[in-house]
Image 1 (cartoon, rainbow, N blue to C red):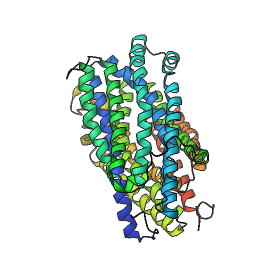
Image 2 (cartoon, rainbow, N blue to C red):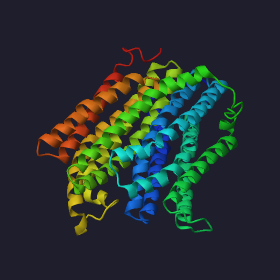
Image 3 (cartoon, rainbow, N blue to C red):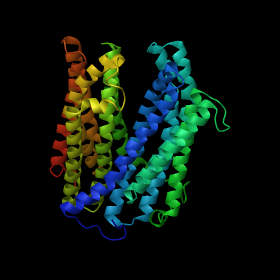
Length: 461
């Protein structure tokens, strides 16, 4: 899409191609990011079970804080899209939005680092073993320094994607995989002339990868003619507090929504642990497969926020309608395929993580197969709620969707999980039915809100 002319309302086919062109690279970047995390696990696992457990405890808090703050700063994407739709190329307005989002990344990142440093008291309260606590702390005090560059890179990713360059996100994330693997190899084991740091070396590798990713985005923006014309790093010291507040107002509900959703899955792990190690292991593997599939509708939701935001800024309700429904069709269609795969070939999918034929994995696999059947059911709801939330973000509607998420996940969702898991013979299956219930409530309520957007005064004509 050219940013230097008035936005025209595309037909359904044109919108489908435009959304796929934006969502494809974003979804690929999300999948590659998961591969980056998997590489960390592969290298750390070679150090031993205790080191892996320690890093998992640290990442559980670090990842939640990082994901939430990425949602906070990610509010810049619909704001950029709105400006482009209203008066492309909107050089000054876009530049100020990106600048203030970068400011917010630094400020929120510093606060996030402080939150992550509360890991030790959290581990003490939850009764973690002293040896594992020490390992987790040694990893945590290093990895927190990657938070600010990660958030800055996320802001720049939103900028290049909104300006029609999502392929940069895919390419940079892909390159980061190789940097991460090489840095893990060097600093964990003392290879390539680097010091042997053990578990903290994995955190050093994360910092190096974060700095590489940030530098790559800066270089891409400086070298690309369309992106460079915005001069987003010009007058970086000049504040625009009105724009800063706007990002915070839109982004805070997004961050809280992410926390609510991540929180219920974290709580589910603690509930599953009450039933036994095999149930928890099967739950973890099944949930990893569901999370892998979720990266695609998550990318479609990111694209929906941008596409809907364009037409919201252009005051084009027809364009808003088409962008939102096309994105929902894409997300639902993909999740229908993954749901079918989970029903028809679950053991093949499990081979991505474990050997289902090994005798030692028999109990894990049996539970994972049960949970995958339920994961297939909630795939559609998970895809719908992710894309619908993205479409509503394009309308800068985040506060009510936040309350929808909090209600759906923490009232019917966790309520059904506890009720069926602990007061019926279903146990782990009951917990998964509760997860599905929360997702279905969220999907239905968000779709209702999207469908009623004009009546609710969310669009502009």
